[in-house]
Image 1 (spheres, helix red, strand yellow):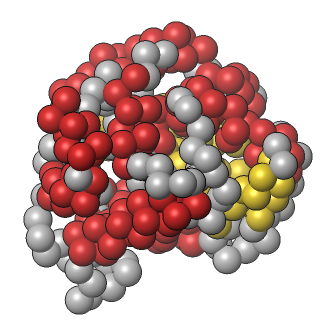
Image 2 (image 1 turned 45 degrees about the horizontal axis):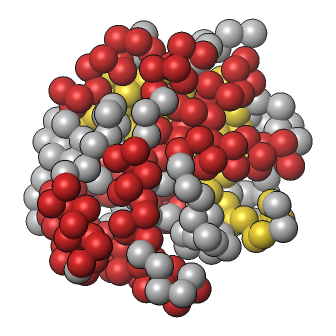
Length: 275
């Protein structure tokens, strides 16, 4: 579905069902140089099992107009604006990687309006190596290949979705290349890869946000994650009093192990929330 936010087109995939603000709502937030399509299985399942789903394309990504927003906090305010525009009284927030930082900030801003918080492939601080940032500025195509290699624990995972025979790392690289190209065409040659990774690298607000979160929290972490090491999420887990679901996957958990991620989300979303 498309809506107008601040005079610009904003897109969210609703999983094949019309959005109904009277039903429980879950917002799915993608990571750097990704879009709503990374939540394919999870968004469709939840939409067909009682949830109103908003798998958003962040500004400048996928079908949402740019430019990309400057920082995590601005993206979180944009997510809250979505809920206000649709009249959704409460929502669960789920984010992957960069999206997990946005979900954290949005949950903090929503206070008691946030019902659950799921942080997938997260870490804090989410620092990016200077070598990767330098490569992203000089040769983003090479940087995409580097990140894509680091994000998958195997060249041939066997997911239940999108189906046998799908080349998951290849699909991820193709998505990143397409988004990088579209953004450059629309925004005068701007580098979306570099922008997104700089947003992750600069973010410093997690502890303040964590102190304001009032809902149940679950971290969903890949045991083989080389992008956001599970060790780097330990303090976040402690401060948020979060449970952890461990997945046998790398950083691209939703693609490598879609069923396991879905089962973890189902467990989180069925947990009791403060009234």
